[in-house]
Image 1 (cartoon, rainbow, N blue to C red):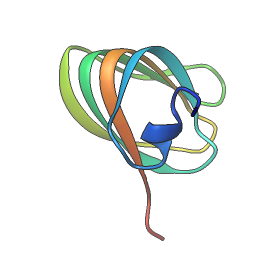
Image 2: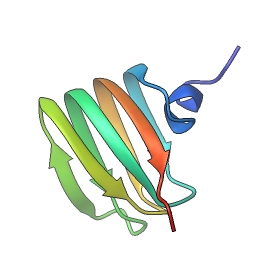
Image 3: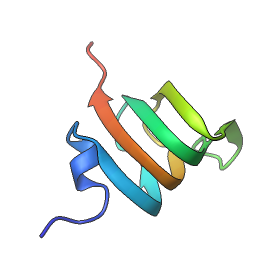
Length: 78
């Protein structure tokens, strides 16, 4: 059985109730749902995404706090 977030980090849509993604590498996040707060490595709010859909680049060291949403991540090409 996989852990929460594994499916999303491997590039597939995953339904999340509440989860904090700790980014280990630069990725692009696709989001559809209620709420996502993106914080940088210092804990400073970078962006607050409200209800709806969005596509954002997130950097290594960022944290994405997702609440009631579908998300997926794709590795950024060099």
